[in-house]
Length: 366
Image: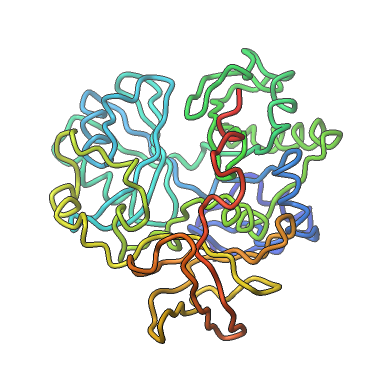
């Protein structure tokens, strides 16, 4: 039984959701709707989901910046008030143990949001002996509103308006007359916003979004729909594209690692592993009419060279897509591979990612 309960639990169950546990909270694994229709809503209109299962940690105090900067592979001194940054979270051996977004609310005030890994434990370790407090805030809920029409849904009901809010920036606002923090972030590859709202107001915010979003084509999105979105947009999900066996170099997160900043957890080990990658994260298109098996082996020249870490059939692209870990010699675009799983055997080809919107122009749209 889940230990944490979202304020939106009853609302989501009333939509006919089939629930399952993730990160100690029951979440909608599926709705009565087709996950492909949910994905289309995110791509063409607006999709909405409860992301309150993510853990929100408040870091406050004179040494708050030192704490988050020790945890993050990014240079957090460059993240000013009103901005956020994605970061891998590493063990001392330079391998992933989680990933997170860190939001700077004030000079000595941060929120770190992470999933089902060890982010909270590592953050608390980084805070030891420093003048800073770290506290889990389960009363702070998150509603994700994603898609090209998300701004049409939110902007008329927000004060101040949100259209000028840039990617990875956030501000305090009243939306539907309710105080919240609005961040232009989200797990979709599309223009989108995450609403940080108090538990007491989350059901009303959800209801208003449903009411005003319906004419725009809004759909609630399940984990099944989110998984399709994640594969199409080639987004990193800790536990799939990155695990405790992987370094940021292997997950192609070089852009999220600052070599020039001071010390951070796992830095020495991480840079000692650079150039020694056992696998690289790549995308494939498989010659198959459905999703290939997660965990399926990848072969080349009669040898196993990798495996599938996430997969989905894209109705929009009419292609079987997968994110894979493959040995560096086979990671070049155009490389032909064999796929062998419990239910499928087929050929596949390494292709560029993201599979949709390769320049991520939708994500950064003005």
